[in-house]
Length: 106
Length: 125
Image (tube, rainbow over all chains, first blue to last red):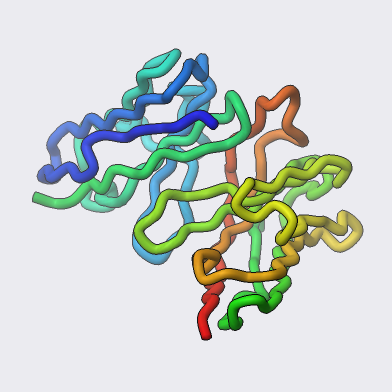
């Protein structure tokens, strides 16, 4: 099983700041990595797929990068609605998720 | 409207059974693989079961293999999860989720581009 490790566990920032979230995989997944956003009481929502492609309707302030084992989700300028939990997921070998990064308001 | 709607969750005693259902609308259901993903308190998302668009291939995680059965009725646009021999550690919110492909191939699977609202399963005496 491919294990995904996200860091940091919690990120405290203010609106307008830049957020950088990391996901590392236990073996190479090429570019087969996605990012999801989950708000309290809601289901996850697909943000980024294939490491760097924004899903339909996702604002341009969200961007993804990386390949192999190291990936990054960047939110260029935080909006109030961006404070949530973010998960990465790989599809290179079955489907597994990271443990999540909580993005909270500082 | 494109959506998934789960039902069937609830409180069940250890050793008991439940069947979850997920109704799909707004897309050609049979074209896409589907999965059940659960979220236990304080734990990461876990894909417990998956099924190809035509229903011919299924997957169950080690944690549920032999106890859970995933199935689908493409004529009714509905996904199911039959859960038997439930354990306290099965307590979680269960989501059905649509894959962006029709199947897994050679282990390579899919992303989950549409999720239901989730249904809570509580296993407790």
